[in-house]
Length: 157
Image 1: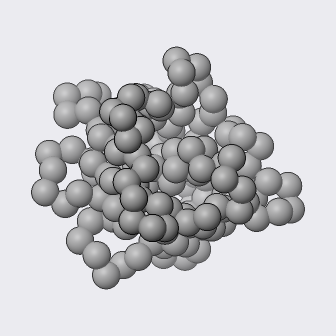
Image 2 (image 1 turned 60 degrees about the vertical axis):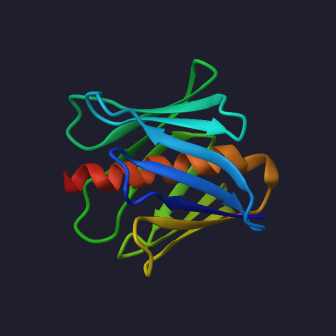
């Protein structure tokens, strides 16, 4: 199953629309305008908040907590590296590996690839294609991609 995460360019905050492979809107993502650090909310098509991604303040490198239903389900932290981006995950038993330019990522559970994330470069705003092996990993995969994008943006701020 494939999803497309597309950032809205003309928005005051980080705002994304998430589409399925048939062009149907599946989720909407919006960052809070007034908050210390990133606070990103994920909504379903009925405008119900289903998850929140918080940036932990006072951390040397970007670190994010992912919450569903008021419960923290995991964290992701960008690690210091000179070339290839690396992340420390305490999230769903997964590990992630990125390429040199931070455009492609593979997510593994044990030795098996569960998600492939690729960044499309010829678009205004960040645009990611997520190829998910198992539909049950859809929401977890979306939250991971958004947290990685926020972690990469935090280094640019």
